[in-house]
Image (cartoon, rainbow, N blue to C red; front, side, top):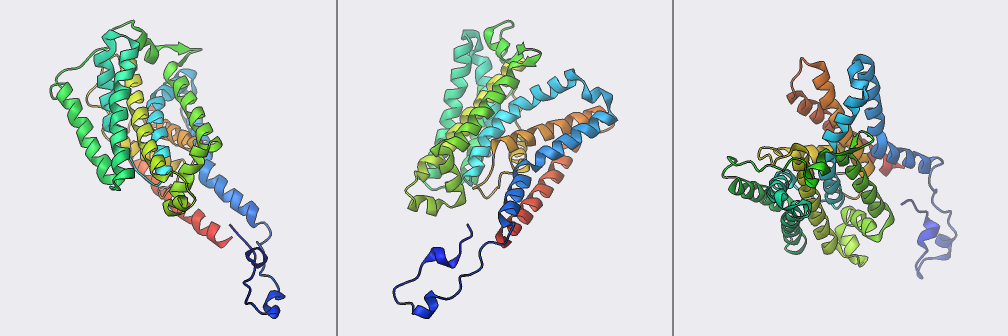
Length: 349
C-alpha cells in the first residue's frame, strides 16, 4: 500500500526543521487505476483468451459451435472443475495438493461400490474416506509443519494403493445399477444441461461467496500473503491451512463420485495426472502459486479454456490428445511470465 510521510508521523526527538520539511511525493497520478488494470489482467485475462479461442474455433470448425458440442464440453469440464475449485483454495494459502487425482479415482470406486445400497451411501462413503485423507493432509501440514509437497505426494501414493487394493489391482470394476437415483445424478439433465454442470456451477458460486464475502475467505488470502503476518494479526493460520486440505479432499472425492455416476462404473485408471491439470487450470486462471491472490472465477475460465483446447484438438482430427499437454504447458509458462511481469509493475507503482 502506497503511503506518504505525513501518514507515518514523526518521533518525539525529531527537530522542528524536519517536521516542516516537504512531504514525500504521493502516489503518481493514475497509479491506482493502473494497479486495478493489472489486477484485472491477472485475474480475468484468461477469460479474454477463452473467448478468443471460442470465436476462432467457431469460425474454423462449424461443428464446434453447435449446442450439443457445447454441452459435451461443459459436462466433461465439470468434474475437473470441482477438483480445481478445491485446489484454488489450497494454492491461495500458499500450499499444494498432489493427491487430488488419486483421491478423485478412489472416490469414484468407493461410490460405485456403495451405489447398490442407494444414493446416500454412494455419496457419503467417498466423502468420508476422501475427507479423512484431506484431514490427514491438513493436520500434518498445518499442525506438524510438514511440507505440503511431501505430505500430499504420500497421500497420492496411499490413495492409489487403497484403490488398487479395493479393486484387486484394477481387475475388478464396480458397476452402478442402471436407472438408480445415483446414476441419474450423473446422467440426468435440466434443459439439456447435465446435473454435473449445474452442480459445478453451484459449487463455484458458493466458493466465490465464501472466498470474497466471509472472514474465512479473507483469512485464506492473508495466510497466503504472509503466514507470519497473519499470525501476528491473531488469525487462525493453522486452522485455515488444515481446512483447505479437508475441502480439497472432499471436493475431489465428490467429483469422483459424480464421475462414477456419469460413467456407471468406478473406473480404476482415471485421475492420473489430474492434479497437474488442476494446478495448471488454477494458475492459468490467475491464482498466484506463491499464494495470497486468486479467484474461483479465474479457475473456472482456466478449466474451460483447457477443455475447449482439448475439444478443438478433437475437432482437428489429425492431432492426438497428447497435444493438449503441450498447449497447456505453453499456456502455463506464458501465464507465469505474465504474473511475474504484473508483480514487477505493481512494485513500481
